[in-house]
Image 1: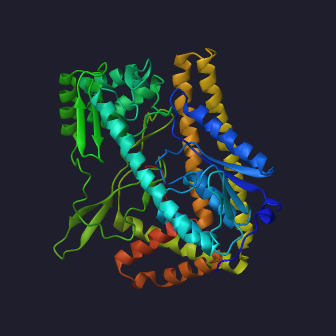
Image 2 (image 1 turned 90 degrees about the vertical axis):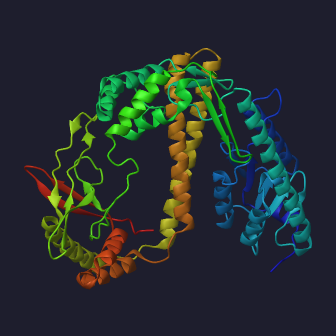
Length: 506
């Protein structure tokens, strides 16, 4: 299980080393970027000292110091297990894993491989050396204890900061945060006041959204307003009354301090709007009061605006047979969501025959596909995913550089603050979306099934041959596994139904 290790053999191998850098605790008098740069410089000097010239850097700057779910870390581990690296280089072992559970999992993954950990502080850590195992685990336990103590101190500091009247939560729409103090955003505060005024005047939420979009206002992420909940959730936050709220789950304390910043609405406006919104809601909790036992439950989507269409109980006859109705679409569409969707309601009894006709066509298409298909090569698929990961890495680095330049332009006075507050949220959202896509792509690589697409098609065909004899609830479950959605268009001049198949290539 374990085997000896010789340092010079790994250092002289032709594989690039994996350099791992995790966001460090900010030092007094230094920004987080400066702290990170100094750590990076130390790590590069350590590599130079040990004649490590070929390496790939994995940088978890975006992660919080106490957050264990680190994107770059998982990406690096995947690359190591795929044979791209044979050494992980860090300043100290605690930068790599912070819990004994995580440490033992990594050791188990690396067991039987040629991969070792090279630390400036601890030296060589070889998961395949049984003489090191006990000392490594003890050291890992100390690191975990240190992590809990650090998290405790951080939360304690945050709680005390909140008690002192500083705003420690995420910056809400309508404000900017300067040194833990909220100031009205020059543009968003005007948008918020427009929302307040229009709701009090009696505008519906959809009408308010249309008005905001027509005037060119955007969300905190720089996008157009769309969902009604984006507006209604604003009035659940008392921050707009000039109050600061903070809930510390670690210490079980709620901090509520009034008059910490400039309010954007009065207490009278707050209560009036809450009452108006509550009076408009017929079903505040979104509870479905009847069980919808149909083959298409939660599968029907509007082919015009893309929203899911609810199915509700229409009536029940004397024999106890229940009829169901697919509701008309109540959503809006268009560039500024100015058009009301023309999709009409339709009974399930009318729709089902057309759905089953579509199923028969789908069965024929599957048969044809099985006859003509060639089984994809799993390695080719992995290569394609790895290429996607590489492309996303490049885009993330470019986006991070763009954000860094934007910050620099603001500091140097090249970029005005009003322009900065418009640009930066969009850049940060784009970076967040790229990182989310990277996580999803890495997950696809990790959970990639060896089962061929053709085998999955055969299983689908077997079910579709016998679905008529299966109970309704099981039909719905199987259709939900096969189809992403059933797209329906039912207007005055058009009726169509389309089955959107789930991606089974992975």
